[in-house]
Amino acid sequence: MQAFIKNVIPSEMNNMRIEIDEFIELYNAGKCELVDIRVPMETKVWQVNFGLKIPAPELPERLNELPKDKLIVVACPKSDRSNMARMWLATQGFEVKYLSGGLLGLMEHLKGGKAKTIKI
Amino acid sequence: MQNKTIDFDTYLKGFDYQERQDMKIQMPELFELYAKGEAQVIDIRFNEEYEAWHVGFGDHIPLNELPDRLDEIDKSKTIVTMCPHYDRSEIARLFLKLKGYNARYLNDGMLKVVDYLRGDKARDYMKKLQGAK
Image 1 (spheres, each protein chain N blue to C red):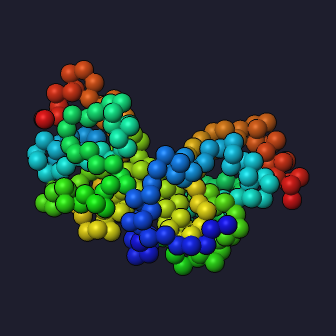
Image 2: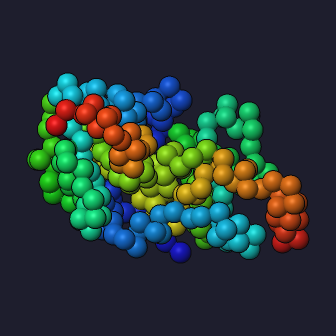
């Protein structure tokens, strides 16, 4: 964590997060996996029909469910919790980014005909 | 007052609804706490950003300098980290939290603060801060 914080420099900022367009592109190419880290009650309210659902507090116990050969994209409704999960996963050695704009941004993006842009 | 450091795994596993609330602070509460002298506000943006513009209260410690400048942080206060939105302030908050500080991030972000503190609102709040000193 100490080393991690010190390495936050302006040119690195963009490597922490991924924009929705790029995420969809990588997802369609099979190069990344989405991880919805919301808590179960939130996931009950509404679900994303692709990616993995692992609540943030369960991540330490369920690390084996994450693919090691893909970029991990963590997401929560906006981006505070996903940022936290990203940091933790980064300390565990994963290549990981958080979804800029969050799941709400993603749902907003996948409206109408645009829903077809993601290959499930 | 919190002093104990927490390891990241433990913190993550214990993350619940309450912590989800406690990790952030909204503008009205921040303004109150700060005026009462109960909060230390830290702008954690990079030096170039701070030079370009900054707010008239609080301290400036760039995120990547935080580990070396912990002695500037007041353990007896609520530490409120802020950046333009809240992505970096959340990193700073988490770092400080794990170090044992009572840290929260400003959910509204600095852009909303400067948008809110316009005209008479700026006058009233800055007057209030002066009165408090």
